[in-house]
Image (tube, rainbow, N blue to C red; front, side):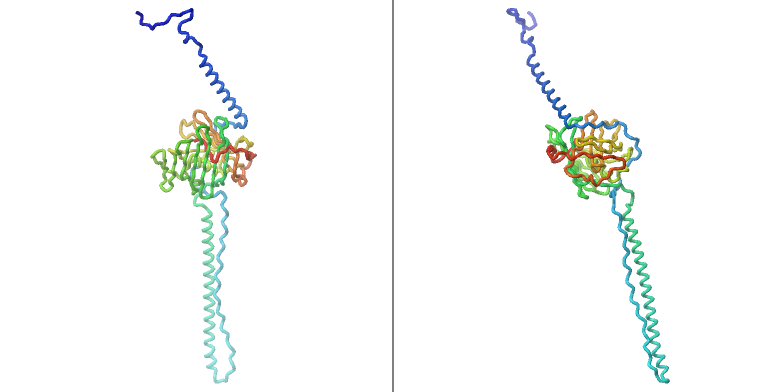
Length: 420
């Protein structure tokens, strides 16, 4: 007896197990279909990329040597109005001086009455002396009033000068005006849908909503709202929502100086001037708007930045002025790069602020550790962001891109970028 399985003999000259020797035609057919679908998608992506994509040079790896490190400190308006000269108060009216008593002519009297004449002259002398005393008192009062007026004017001038000059040198600061901004979104250079940044500023409060639509997943929405305090933009609440997932919220408690997260029970201290992952770009733009000449190559600005579960230090170093290519044209922008946060940090963020756009972001590029690049590139504005009020620095040419076509309805109501 054999322990091997039985194998039927071939009959009529046909080999055994003909099913095993049959060529795999079904799998070959499906493989061809799959290759055809992939080729069509690749061709479509190439076509889309060739119609509307713009090419920008990759950010330089070498950054200038750091020449200055700027940290958070109280801010002041970019161009405070000159204080009005103090108007000295009107001098107090002089007290009326009593007129000297006139001496009435004395009728001639007979000789026996010389004593009566002397008696009449005594009251007149007293009246004159009283008038002189009143005049001297009035003059003294007028001099005192004049001295008090001069002292008050000097005090008012000193108070005005003290109010005009800050107690300590502050950062020049100019928050961008309200505007709805549109950006092309690109992943590894391939065009995606249009994203938006909705920014509002009433001088005391601000709100920012960043939205990027992601196919098959839904929009990535990041929102930040708060007020403007003595350190600039001051977030009160930051949230991020990716697709259909629930939003993660970070609370900036300025009273207790604590960061409270919904994603983790651990609280962290809140530093003065603390920002979130997207308000930091508007804070940087506000500082550059206030004093463009301060941010020369090598100057580094430090921020305390909170995410949805942690807080860390970001340092943006000025690289220099470069040209940004957009669909509407090319224009000059100042390049800032985030320095590594720790040893071995391979995630990078670069931002370009354009003077012709009122120093708003013209390009934001995030490079992941695996090399993937996510980019926001200026598409246009739905509302002028106040570029007419901005003046480019000397030697910087600005040829701003045109306004996008009004027929382009691809932009959603709100915009968001992918998490840096």
